Length: 347
Length: 242
Image (spheres, rainbow over the protein chains, first blue to last red):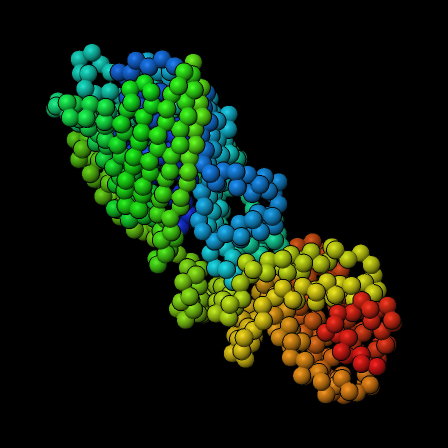
C-alpha cells in the first residue's frame, strides 16, 4: 500500500505533467455531474453525497441504501458564451477562435454535462453522453498568447463499494470509467494561428480509468471519517498523449449528531499543479433537508462556493455560485466566477 | 502505515509543485515591467540568437511600451494575412486595389505618440531579423510593426508639403521620398509573403512587390490613369498633385 501511494503521488506530481500556467485547470476540476459536485469540486471525494446525489468516492456506496434512476443536466453561465468558440475550435477556425478569445482578457471557465445514472445500493452505473469544458487565458496584448484547455467527452461509468462483515468501519470502492474525448490543450500565439491554423491541434483519445477509493470511520461520537481517492488512473488508453494525470485526494469528514444532525463537513486536501500549499486545503459543509434537497458551501484559500437544490415530485432543480481565485502569474491573481444551474428528473 | 505514506506523499508532492512554477516572460509584459522584460528577452537572445520566440516577445515589449496592442488591431492582421487571397485581378489596377486594402486598414492601427515611440518600433523591427526557424506569425508581426512605422511616415504630411507644390514626378526629392516609401512597402510585402503559409499566395504577394517596383522606378514611371487615381489611397494621391 505504501509503495502504491508513493508511485501514484510521483506519477501525479506536476514535475511529470505539462501545465498551462495561470489557466483554470480543467484537468483537475473533479466530478461535475451534479450541482453539488460542481460547487464543492473535488471535496466530494471525501464526503458522502446527499440523498438524491451520486457519491463521487465509490467507497461511500458500500453502506448506501439509495435506489434511483436520474437524468441530469448541470452547467455554468459561461457555457452558452463559449458554445460558438467551441464550434470554431471543432471546425479548426483558428482565426475566429483567436478573435473570440481576444475580446476578453480575464481567465474564463465553462462547463456543462448531461448525464444519466442508476444506483441500487452499493453500486451505480451511468452514462454521460456529453460533457464539455473550456477554459482560457490571454497574455501579452501586444503579441497575444492564448492558453486554451477545451474538451468534449462521452463517458460510461460503473462504481461499486464494499464493506466487510468483520470491520464495517473500513469501506473500499472501485470506479471504472470509459471516456472517449476530443480535446485541445495548448498554448499558442494568436498571430501564429492566424497565419497557420494547422498549429491548433484537436486531439482524440479513449481511456479506461480504474479509480480506487477508501473510507475509514473512527469510533467516535462525531463519526470522523478519513476518505481518499485516486482518480484519473488509466488502465488502458489509446490515441493522442494525455495531459490528464492521476490525481490524489484525501479528506477528513465529520457529522454532528445531536448538535446539527443534518449537517456534515469535510476538510479536504488536493494539490493542483502550480498552486501554493494553502490553496490545496478546503472546507466543505452540506446540510441535508432530508429528501427535499440539500445546500452546500465550500471555502478555501481564494475559494468560495454555495449551492442549493430541491426535489419536488420527480424534478430536481438547483442553482449555485462558485468563485475561485486563479494565480495568473507572480503578480496577478484573478477570480473566476461561475453561476451553476441544474435540472434533473428522478425515477 | 497508510497515514505515514500519505504524509510522505504530500511532502513529495509539495516539492514537485515548486518546480512547476516557471513562466515564459509574457507575464512581465502584462504587468508593465518592460525594462525587466527587455533584460530577460535580451539575455535569452544573447544565449541563443536563434530563439525567435524571445525575439518576437522582445519586439512586442517595445510595442507594448508604446500602447500598441495586437489584440486591438487583430482585424488589420487578418486583412494582411488574407490580402494575397482577397485580390483576384492582375496588373497595376490589381496592385492598387491591394494597396488600397492595406492602406485602408492603416486607420485601425494605433498612432505613435512620440519620436521615442518611433525609435522603439524601429528597434522592435531590428530585433526580428530573418531566421530560418521563425514562425509565419513572426513575419506577419514584423509586417504589422513596419506598417505602424509607415503610418507614422504618412501621418506627418508636412514632409510631403514642399513636394506637393511641384508638378514634376521626376523631381529628385519626390523621387527619393517615393523610392523610400516604395522600399518600405516592399519590405512589408516581403514580410507578408514570408508570413504566408501557402506558396501560391506568397508568390502573389511577391508579384505585387515586383509591380510596385516597376511603378516607382524612374524608367517605368507612367502617370497613373484616372481610374487608378480614383482607386488610389488618399495618402498616395498627394504624390501626384498635377
